Image (tube, rainbow, N blue to C red; front, side, top):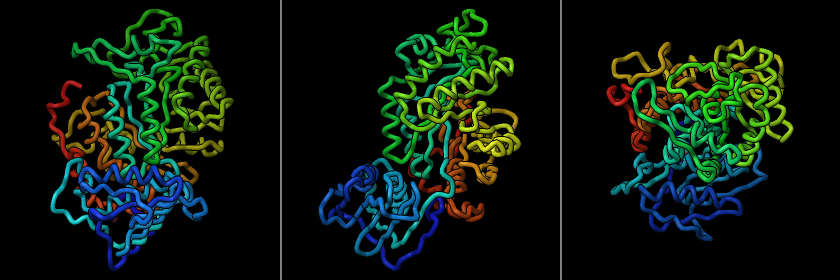
Amino acid sequence: MIVPLPTRIVRRSKGFTLDRDTSVRVTPGAEPAARLLRALLRPATGLALPIADHGQILIALDAKLVGLGAEGYALTVNEHGVLLRAATKEGLAHGVQSIRQLLPAEALRTSRASDVDWTLPGVDVRDLPRLPWRGFMLDVARHFQPVPVVRRFIDLMAFHKLNVLHLHLTDDQGWRMPVPAHPLLTSVGGWRTETNGDGVPHGGTYTRGELEGLVAYAAERGIRVMPEIEMPGHARAALAAYPDLGVAPEPLPVWTRWGISDAAFGLHAMGFVREVLDEVLEVFPGEHVHLGGDECLLPEDVHGQFLRQASRYLLDRGRVPAAWEPTGDTRAVVMPWKDETQAAKALERGQPVVMTPHTSTYLDYPQSDGPHEPPGQPGYVVTTRDVYHVPLPDGVLGAQCQLWTEHVRSKDHLEYLAFPRLAALADTLWSQRPEWEGFTTRMRLHSERLAALSVPAEMRRERCEHS
């Protein structure tokens, strides 16, 4: 069974087998979905699935298809072939992922699988998400994550029909995005001398081309990327590069510890912030830009004024700001992480809300209290069940999980923390009638898919002891 659970799925008596003679037919605009399907299936199946005028797999973009919203799709498989239809490219991308899940799990491998019957079961699927915001935040500031790691997470998100990648690009411990007008942000702010006394330098930055490539790669898979530039607090890496921007203009190194630094931008840094945001808007064309906004030791009135000015700058340019705290403008998206009270107050003000409560969405917390768990953020345990039951008050846009990387260095550790908890988030946000027991039943098969995708199911403690 598919994860997340489709809105409606009806089994047919006969399915369709992909073989060397199978080809793909597309309507205008559906070419990206066809390319995606062919690229994803060829490594394991060895099938070319060429584009042809009379292909047995028809992928159709139909703007007149009604009732499926901005992300829904309709999929039919019978003995004659496969028909995938959607009104949007995003819907077609989601339908491609359902086709992958209907095939044997071996289809997900990156190397050739032999002696496998590539048969899709006969089904009629009509599917659309319950909530429009199904997100995942990846912190690349605390520990830098190279482009292949981020692309891999985009693939895993797409497989589960998650649709917002929130990239946490800057913090006290590192600045990862280049800004041509301020080159020291990356040459100085992108590197720290050590981490918590380990004596090992750490850093890394992206090029503009790499970030634009990630945006395009995500869009092909139905995912939009929301960048986050932290302000006015969590700014120590930027202030290491440009001390005069701070409230206390004194030279400070990029921070080598965790926690909350007392370094912050002063209001006189707003010109710098606008120049940074101008670059962000060019690189990231999506609707939302995250301003951070939390855990700042500035006086409340100065903190509020700073966020209001930054928010207004984005709104005047047709973008929507997002923040962990209210920005003073009801058009801005709020992501309450402390408790549900924050969400209730924002909803009363008429603000758009995306749920991010730390007790059910922070994946840096251990998944269990067992001795096998690698080191993580202390204080809580966040289980897969906790994620599945994330609070979703009426009127919210959706929710997202956060993976802060203070304690996480390797790709395997990242993926171990993300799954199966991200699968739970995907199911509870997409399914029209989420139900925990049904999800756990479907996860028995889905665990085989995760294994075929090489997602680690366990971690050795000693690999992460010095995070």
